[in-house]
Amino acid sequence: MAFGPDFRTYRGATTATSAAVLDAGLRAYMLRVFNWMASGLLLTGVVAYGIAHSEAINYLYPTVQNAQGFLVHRPSALAYLLIFAPLAFVMVLSFGVNKLSRTAAQTLFWVFAAVMGASLTNIFLIYTQTSIVTVFFVCAATFAATSAWGYVTKRDLTGMGSFMMMGLFGIIIASVVNMFVRSSELQFGISIIGVLVFTGLTAYDTQRIKSDYIQYGYGYDQELSAKRSVYDALSLYLNFINLFLMLLQIMGNRNSN
Image (tube, rainbow, N blue to C red):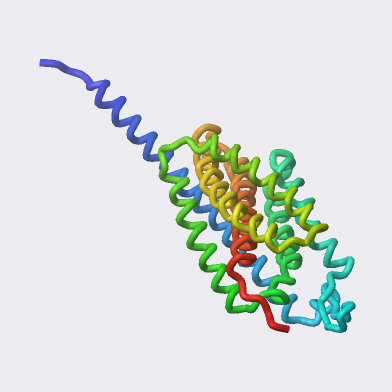
């Protein structure tokens, strides 16, 4: 007869408990990330809608007469400033996340989401509200399905992420060129490729966030976990916004006026 504890059973129970704790922490962290992302999108939408349906829109996009005699909306200097301002916030949050305090990172994220909303007000001038809402729900369904796949898949998406980043740089270069050539065919091609790129980046970023949490143990440092959740939410937020804009260019119905 054997006496004393069965260390194999104890070790197995300890391993199972550790795995359960890690899994619970991961799920809580991912929920925090998606809550930040969803809150940011909500703020962006509220700001964009509010400005578009107030007198402020006339300061950002005043009505002028073009060469053909039609009244059109032209972006003001302030509108151009708002369009490029989010880039500054992205750079600060991306490169300074480890140096910023939790409060500073969270505050910057809220300000960024609000400024992004102000920069997107022109979509209400270009597209009908019905098509904006429709495309938003199509985008949300696509994003949710792709992100869920990125979370559960056992396939390593690192290679795909690198390929998608190359595609992103290609989109940026093509978009800059199209600012001068103004080709509708090129813009349509950019939008199609953009949908593929940002759906791919959504799956990649979701898997990366999951892997980083496990590898770097964010759950053991509450301050780091809080800051990283904001940064990770920013990555998913940008994927969603860009996917939405690409789909809107493909599926959106333009205003007749």
